[in-house]
Image 1 (cartoon, each protein chain N blue to C red):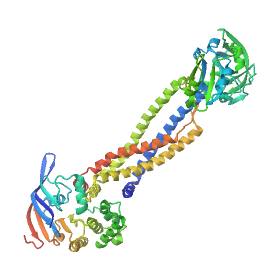
Image 2: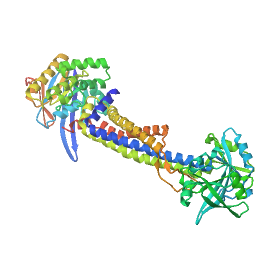
Image 3: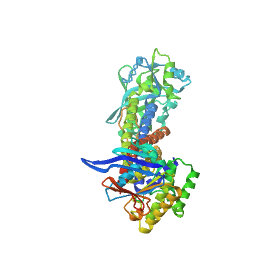
Image 4: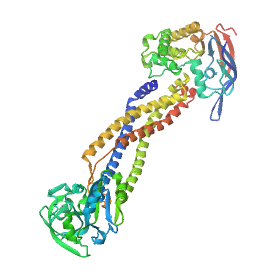
Length: 405
Length: 231
C-alpha cells in the first residue's frame, strides 16, 4: 500500500504546478462548502434563538379561547391571576423561568407622527426579559413605574425620541374602546433585531393591566425551559381545561419549515460546488492517464493487474484530496470562526415577527457538519476518480505500449 | 523443454474497414535456454510475434502455449499474472518508470510478485551488480545514459527469474559500444542462468549473438536456422 502512495506522490510531483492548482481547486471548494454551511447554520441558529428568546419562548400557556392574531385584552381571552399560574408552572423541574405577559395593540404618537405598535406588559424583574436589558440609553423599567415606557432604538430614531422625551400611547382596551396616555421614555433598548425593535414597546405589567383595563389578567405565561427538547413533556404536565399550551415547534412552524428548506437548499449548493470541484480533479487525472499511457503499458507488461492500476490512480486522487481538503477545511474553519465572531451585517431583513433575524448573521459550524463535509468531499473525489482510473486499467498493454513510440 | 509453442497463429489487425494480416499461420517452438533472434524487414511480423509470445496480445486464430499454459481465452488479469511470473520484457525505448530510481524500477516486478523487503533488496542488488549498475542504483532514468537505462531494463526483466525474456529491438536506440555491452550482458545471463531470450531485431550486432535466427517475411516464417546460418 505504501508503495502505491510513494509512486502516486512522485507522479503528482511530475507536474507540480498542475497538481498544486488541482489541490487548490479542491481546497477552495471545501472552504466554500464549509463557509456556506456555517452561514446557513448560523443564519438558522440565529433565527431560531432570536425567535425563541424574543418572541415565542419554549412554551406559551394561553387562555383556552385566546387568539394570538387579535391581541385582544377582553378578559375572556386572558389568564386570570397570571402570577399564581406562572409560579405553579415554575415549580416544574424542567422549567427555567415562567413569567406573565400582557399583549395589546396600540399607537405611539409624537407630534404629527404615529406608528402602530404592540404593547407588551412585562414583569421587569423576570430574567425572561433579559434580552430587552441591552439599553442604548436610559434605564430599564421598574415594576412600580406608572409613567415610564421602554421603546426600541429604531422606533426612537423613527420618531426622533430620546430618553426623557414624552410620547402619547393609545391602547385598545378590554371593553373594546380606546384609552390614551402620555408616557416618558425611560429607556431605549436594542435586541439587534430591527424588525422586532421597531414594533414593540414595553410597560410594567401592572401599568399595562391598568392602562388597558385587563385587571388582574395576562395574555400568556411565557415559559423558558432548561432544555427546549423537553417542551412536549412539560406541555403534557400542565393541566388543560382552561388553558391551551403551545410548544415552540407549534408556535414557529414557519421557521421549522424554513429550516428544513434551508437544509435541502444547502444540499443542492453542496452538490453544485462538489460537482465543479471534482471535475477539476477528474480532468487532472484524465490528463495524467493520457500522458502516461505508455507507462501504464509498461506496468501492465511487467504484470500489474487492472485493480492495481486503479489503486495507483486512486492513490494519486487520495493524495490530492487529502492535501486539498485539509487546506480547504482549515481555511473554511478559520473563515467560519472569524465571521462567527464579527458577523456579517445585513441590516433589517424586514421579516415578520414569526421569524426574526438579527441584523448581523454570525456563522456557526458544528464539528459534526465539518466532519460530514470533509468526508463527503473526500468520497466524492474518490468516486469521481474511478472513471480515469478504470480507463487506465482497461488499456490493452499492446496499444498502451505503442501509444507514444 | 518447450518454453513457448505457437501453432498456426494468425493475427489480423482491423483499422476501420482495412484488415492487415500481421501474422499468417505461423508455427514456432522456443526451447529452454535458446538465444533466438526474430529477423526480417519492417512489417514482417517480428514485433507481433513477440507480443503474442509475451501475452501482451492475443491471436486472431491459432494456439499459443507459454510455459505449458494455453493462453487463448485468458482474461486480461490472467495474462498479467502469467507475464508476472514467467516473462520479462526489454523494449526498444528505454521503458523505465521515470519517477522511480534504477533500484525501484528493478524492484517493481518483485513487489508485484509479493516478495518481502529483504528478498527484494538482495535480488535487486544482485541484478544491478550483474548488469554493472550498482553504483547508479539511486539514479532516476533521466540521470542515466541510454545504455545504462537499457541495462537497468534488462535487470528488471530478470527480476522475477522468468523462464523467458523478450526483447524488442533492444539495441535500436543505442550506439555501438552500448549496444555491444547490453548484448554481452544478456548473452552472459543466458549462459549463466539458462534463461531463454527471444529478440526481434534487424541489427546485425544482435544477430551475431544468436544461437537461432528465425526470419520472417509478410507474416510468415521463411527461414529458421542456427546462429551459423544452418537451417
